[in-house]
Image 1: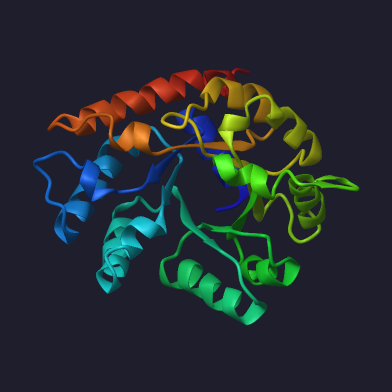
Image 2: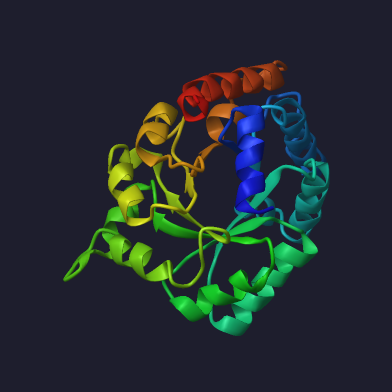
Length: 268
């Protein structure tokens, strides 16, 4: 899916919502089993009630890999249930020497047919480039993340500004606005305006809305550009909106609430 197709989907649904699929069995409603079958059942139910309200899904691979080899089969079942016209992101945070990154890219882009994968930039250009060699696929590079520990390295001062600012400037020469996005956490709020000034054209994947305290309207105000420019991820606030048998209807309500907060993005 290219950038124009993604923006068209956003305008059609009036949504920039990405639903993060982080299926934690300890948080499932009591009537859903905590095993392989239950995880897939839970994810499919969430997809069924959210697909009309979102433009992307982001399975977090850790929650599948925790089941060992069976986890890959579970991921495949979940991916098969996502409608093909909806953008999919492998939240894998990979990044290694070139030949290893090439194999990661083949796994996610060819085997599972994800549209995008999250990649860590720490090892530099040659660890990212293999992911950019696939047509109509995207790298989502970690830029300024929403976790508390992001300050440990991302905000280290250098002669050219903070380290994350250097990452944003340097990496723009590796790809372009049609095949590279950046992870920029919603919990940084108004700092999104500064990040947008450094990266004017690229899409941002913005986690941290909902359970982590980020605000969708603030993300739109400070992070959007003329092509929409933001995918706003929410995971726990949607998946675990209820721990009862009404978990699907409550998840849908949360999607509608978030989309209302994003309405300013689609005002002509």
